[in-house]
Image (tube, rainbow, N blue to C red; front, side, top):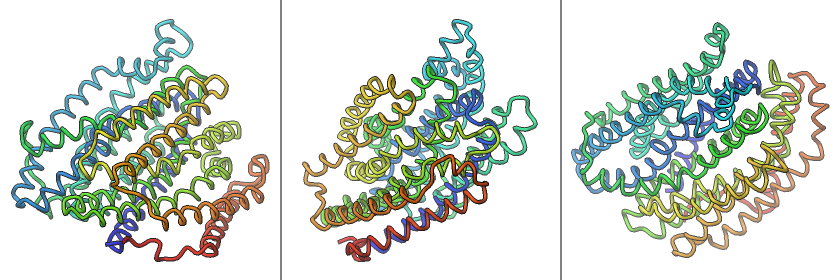
Length: 518
């Protein structure tokens, strides 16, 4: 089983790598086009709202509730029953998402007032920033349909993952990045308001992703006609699991939205700084954390259906070791090389040295929570695979309240950096509570070998970070270098860090056997 998990993990990571690289290219193009000004703030706001709802209706709570039930139907019911479940779920989910999408488009002004309260107050008082509220309301009307497209895209991806077809769903996000890059390069420069072109790119990217997976579902005879079936037994179970999961999965997204609302009261550029630093954080999180979580949820669900407790624990152990192996050095590298990365990726056009330094501070703050965010992605499926969605909700609410408290404490001395730090701290709390809950229920208790493995990873990662910190020059030197020279130096530091980390792991005794389950 470990070979299958590792192979699936590599496939997902490889496809995700392509998507994340294109995502960085997309952000580079957007930074060059708009920098970190008012228009950038508004576009990132309008893009974040449907993405927040996407996590609720699609990739987040829905997946966590749908995959275990889908896996059970696949293993214990007939193929016709599985098709019937898909028809019922797609029709029921589709009608609900259609209603939410239409409400969001028609009520874009109310949504903007809720999540962009600072801009709304400016508009009410006819202040100098009033145009941000009006522009955000317009952009939301264009970006909100993305929620409809991506909800069905995510459902199709969950179906394909359950049948072991991980590559398709992992590659699908590439089309959104391609659409946004095309919009930024060819459409936006031709418009008086470039941000409108980007919003159209979001719409087009969602449509292409929606259509892309149809042929793959058809090959598996899983492209069914949707029908409304609120009382279908499978739908009842999924919505019973999904309703509490909405709160648990959405904790980090609610925190981000709360950060966005608070940042709307801060100086222009605050939302953009948080966006660019969050995008760099998402690169390793998606490449390692989400990729590993994607492949272990079906495996954990299968172990639970088969009542294989040892296999369940072994799969959890494998996931923990993998995110420690990848996450800890990624976290330290992101913190130490935050400004060089931002300089190489974004410092051009409207994005200058001042923006690099400002975004670098929030990236360091976000980076402190990267390992915790990765652990959450692996620990939470330990509950969802057992069809326990209530416990993560309780822990998530605690973490969300803690984030609000941290925000209130940190925003005054640290501004937008305090918002990022609060998110990292609440993520650490959430991961700790999830681990404690699994341990208390005797579902998963890391063994002595996993503890030793974590210690070795910490030693190797600390050695790597210390070397990078000592060797890397200050930002002023990076800015003086040409882009080509800065890029070569950054790649050299990353390669040297990876090599040094690998050598230190070997010296501490880490071997291939540590990546096997059971």
